[in-house]
Length: 114
Length: 117
Image (cartoon, rainbow over all chains, first blue to last red; front, side, top):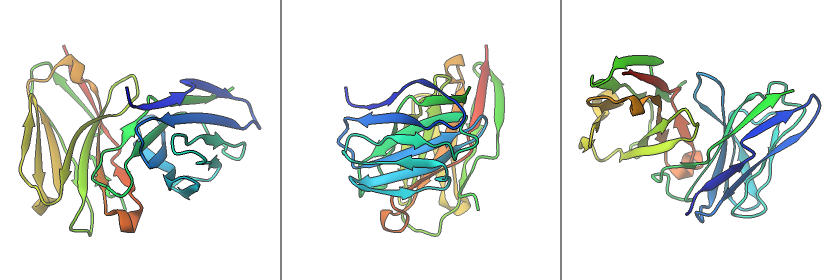
């Protein structure tokens, strides 16, 4: 079945460590997104990409980095510069050019500090 | 400024009661799209409905119905005869034209609905 796969489901980070969250989609979508969700809050956009080898900062990009080398993959790295990384991270995708298409979401990754 | 406002942070209802979740949005575009998503305790967001700005017809899907009113910039969601399985966080979202915003979605802060058996 087509969908978005995020891994791992749970991730723990040590102080000063970079960690990478995986996001893979087989929906043939051009656009992919990373959101951060804190308890009791909405979704905040970290980065998004509309096409391979191109990505844009969202509202809270500081302390994060991404790459988009393949259409299917949009990994997110939480760097040591992100001082408060504990949150629920959601990856999404939808077809480029059509903002009327709903975003499809993965199951999320819960990141915690050790 | 918040583009999508969901003023109700938490709502609790008893099973079989009707409940309405409010969503107010802000945009200067004439073409835009509105969405509702459900986030169950497992975490993934599930798409429920999309509405474009030119279609103000209300929609009903089973126990779910949506009331879109451009005059008040609202897109409210009603669950009739609520069930325990409806317990979740519900998000309203706005999408503006691709050219100007790069296909970004703006999400409200969500309304946590608890249906008590």
